[in-house]
Length: 506
Image 1 (spheres, helix red, strand yellow):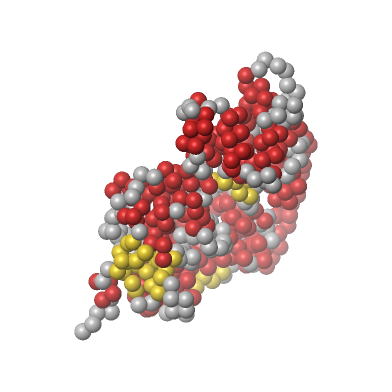
Image 2 (cartoon, rainbow, N blue to C red):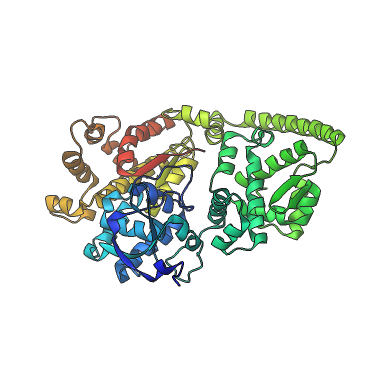
């Protein structure tokens, strides 16, 4: 009798270049497109722990070669006849990037190129895979995330929930089919579906209208810490006081829905916002009562909800009055900063505004494997330009030096520069490094060529001499936020070229 999984007994060598990554992988952000290798790599390394794990995988391949202990499962698409990776996307991505470092995101390209130079790329040309007859045949294995190998990263709770929801929709809620694929019990599956349905409450108008854009986007994001919701509603006392009843995989609200949704919106705010009363997974039976009392009371009658609405409106008025009083006490610069961090429209309006109180707006994110660059960039987003102009001006010179070094190593031109100036890179001054980049890497039409020329001209307002003076000279400079912000804005296109800076939703 032919085994249903006979294909797992046959290893087939396939070209790494011919294998395609799976764009619907639950590890990836479902709200973004994944077309290039850089798209995939950015998602796989977006968070600190993920980047560290990916670098460990890269380093392991370099030091020990590609270890084929964990199976790589692929299937052939019936429409384009290409082979897609169902299991092993991180490992195949690592191999592809080692073979083509230039396709890595800017933030990790230097690390990938350095690793690539240490390995014989011919050894990474092909890899043994197991070819499933179809994607459906590979589904059961996709759920096997319990390998003891340190190089095979398990799915997070949210990723597993997202995958199960996809199976639920695909198989029309067929529990037996999904149980066969996932090897989970019916009760485990029901719990998954209930929590996912609870999370979807954020899309109901009564909840969504209580959240600002930033709060809703965080709650709707695939990064939302769904385990906090799961832990909160697993307490029977919570379900009792909030009028929530579980019935199989269904979630029924028996309390007043308007009251419930209002309390739920406040819960979401306490989860996604950074504050002293932030709710996290460290909930216990001991502090549960305190948490429940700090949230709006859920009522069970129309009369009660009218009273609740009145109380909520009064509380909102009191809160607004307190906020107005506090805002009047703040300096204008702090007002600007408050708006920068709480209102996305205002943040957009502050782009290029020399009167902003932060050198870098909160809408920008730097992807880099350089600890010093990342720390400086984040400090630029939090330190007041008005209060600490000298500190920021000096740090800006350091940041430029680090950004140039990062670009040189990422573009693999260290030896070229050293050969030109007959010295080691650490002894070559920043001015010469910039000159070399301007002469050899930027065309005449590239605006960054002109920026470097102006930067190297001591007669210009925003010059390297001025930056050096912030650190080395005893001259007195008129260091106000207009000057410092203007310097950053002048250099920003260059930083955008040298580094991987992205604009993100806040």
